[in-house]
Image 1 (cartoon, rainbow, N blue to C red):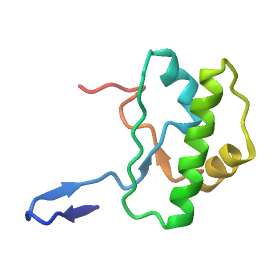
Image 2 (image 1 turned 135 degrees about the vertical axis):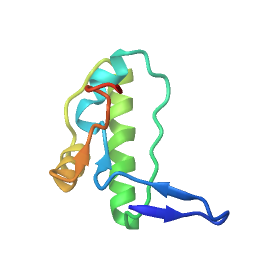
Image 3 (image 1 turned 180 degrees about the horizontal axis):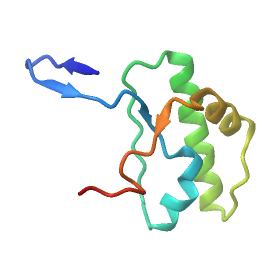
Length: 93
C-alpha cells in the first residue's frame, strides 16, 4: 500500500499488518522498554481492542506472568492470517 502524506512524500507499507502480539514475550525478553503501536486504516473498535490487548500483555509481563486474556485472544483471532512479523526472525540482508 502506498500512502502519500501532507508533504507529498509517499510511504510504502507492507500489505500485511506488522504485529508481534503473539510473540510479545520474546520481544520483552530482549530488554525492550517501550512498545510502539501505530494504526493506519484500522477502525476505532479494532484499534481499541489491539491497544487493550497490548496493554494487558505488557502489564502481565511486568508482573512475571503471561497468560492470554480474553482481549488478547480476541485480538489474535481478529488478526489471524492478516499479520507479518516483518524481519524480526529473518533479519535484513
